Length: 255
Ligand SMILES: NC(=O)c1ccc[n+]([C@@H]2O[C@H](COP(=O)([O-])OP(=O)(O)OC[C@H]3O[C@@H](n4cnc5c(N)ncnc54)[C@H](O)[C@@H]3O)[C@@H](O)[C@H]2O)c1
Image 1 (cartoon, rainbow, N blue to C red):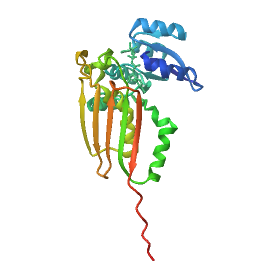
Image 2: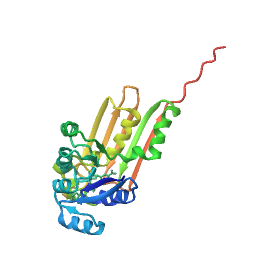
Image 3: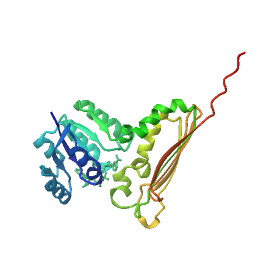
Image 4: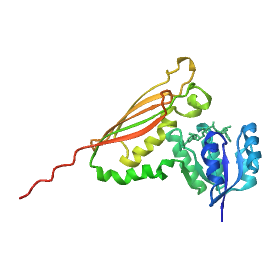
């Protein structure tokens, strides 16, 4: 039996990934969509041929989905998730899980109380390129240095909610660095020390306060050092992570 799925937030990420994913799924069917912008909603709902709602609560009450994909701007994620949890509806939430530690604790409590599962879309964890690295790290020797880079050029870092710290909760670290940071945690665990420098000045007349560029330095008690360079100002569009290792220790000849 197919699970009944709904999408709340019909912007870029829903159109690029979630709608094609659901429409092609043999295990879930799209039963409703929601966007609080009526123009976007009607455009999408008409094409998809499913009921559309401007309020998440109305969608949940009227269509009773098994789970909901939440793909709204960062500041709206908590309230929508709370509405789902209050009705016992499971959530696949777009990253970030939360915009602060406090919000993360609240969300965890809300989901626990509502007995719902919340999964965050960290899709690299299901990509063989990244999962194969997790399996190979043991074989390459002791990691010594790790460097991650994620950048692209947006001509206006202040455009939309992403340029506004209150709505986005953070700039390129939270929005773009999230995936690389998750990979670092997956591969190497929590660092012992973190220092970050960031800038909101790539476009001084842009009037935005969410960082456009950041350099993050990491230190692990194991002796591993790392850095992340993140920018939504610097072309070309690039994402990579490199790991350097210590040379294998020579095996002593015991003869
Ligand atoms: N996993 C990834 O690789 C990836 C990639 C891009 C974006 N994202 C995430 O997806 C989420 C959405 O990003 P986006 O680029 O699609 O943004 P977007 O601005 O293109 O779309 C967000 C949509 O949500 C709607 N919306 C806002 N508040 C709402 C509410 N309370 N109820 C219903 N609809 C509401 C807006 O009208 C808009 O259509 C963000 O959390 C972002 O970080 C993840």
